[in-house]
Image 1 (cartoon, rainbow, N blue to C red):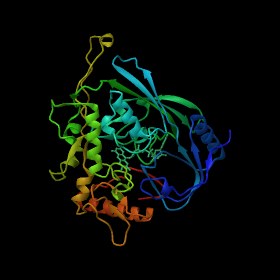
Image 2: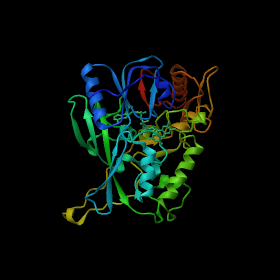
Image 3: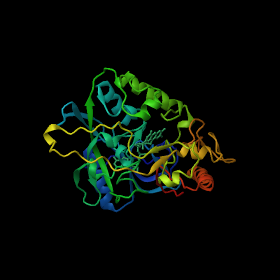
Image 4: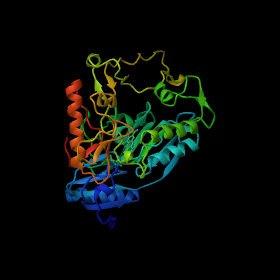
Length: 380
Ligand SMILES: Cc1cc2nc3c(=O)[nH]c(=O)nc-3n(C[C@H](O)[C@H](O)[C@H](O)COP(=O)(O)OP(=O)(O)OC[C@H]3O[C@@H](n4cnc5c(N)ncnc54)[C@H](O)[C@@H]3O)c2cc1C
């Protein structure tokens, strides 16, 4: 099969942080066959490779990328029955735009993705860091993925339970995480969503209610949630907008730090912190057919806590909009966690700012913030 090669362009034009040199080769794969064919051919050549979705979670270095970039451009949503009454499955091609999937689910009256409206990028990249927002994350609705493994060159279906999904991590993410890395490319992603229709319902999750300014017991529709999530995100520069340099970012550049409860006690009381477990209201339903007279033990208590990286940055003396002298990299003027490229800034300038922030937070609070985006050809 002929490879759908295109003339390589600098990765700074394909990533939302707007950095990155030109790759040796660039392939645009618009069908699963093209994607599988391009990957097998690239792997057989032994060259370096990088799979690219929307480029919204990548921090790429300034040097040319000596290898092949395969851009995933497959699209399509299939609606399938679910074995669970009241639910349906959505099998989505990896290159499908994430927010378009959220819009589809909301308009079809399907719940489970609405709080993640407005997250940039593709569906295939979503499991890579178990994307999430306002207490909802895809591990809550993800059933399985079809993927192509580099080690075997074969396609297999892998259940969500084997993907090492954790807080902004999975077996696919390169630079940290306890589960061993799996070099694979996701071809399709299957979600299970609840058929709730367009009626107003109480919002599940205290974090989402707080972000939307809702009291418990106040019912709203899925459409209302999507619209208001998008508005909140826009006000923080967290929805891509060419006209707004505060969105020339990779979203949150640093992860909220996960620390032990005893370390968290050494931080000032005002530093926001959350329990590590996903924020879902505690309801355990055992289907009658599966009930064998034994009630499952209560979930074990996780003592680690997540602390706000944005708070740590701001309280180490770095305000929104902060930049180093003569640098074209700056903190967003709307959100202290987003490092932004103010136009033609290089990866070196962004890395210098990132290291400066890490140093300030470490000397003030004794912990090293870890980057959230995937780093390619650049080190912090
Ligand atoms: C303004 C802004 C706001 C954001 N807000 C959020 C947020 O609220 N929550 C959140 O979790 N994230 C957020 N992000 C981060 C980002 O949008 C997500 O991580 C998104 O899933 C990345 O998708 P992408 O297609 O752009 O991935 P890319 O940046 O193209 O790739 C990211 C990584 O995934 C790999 N990858 C891409 N496609 C595949 C595939 N098909 N199979 C295997 N690996 C693949 C790449 O090789 C790379 O390692 C935000 C980013 C921006 C710019």
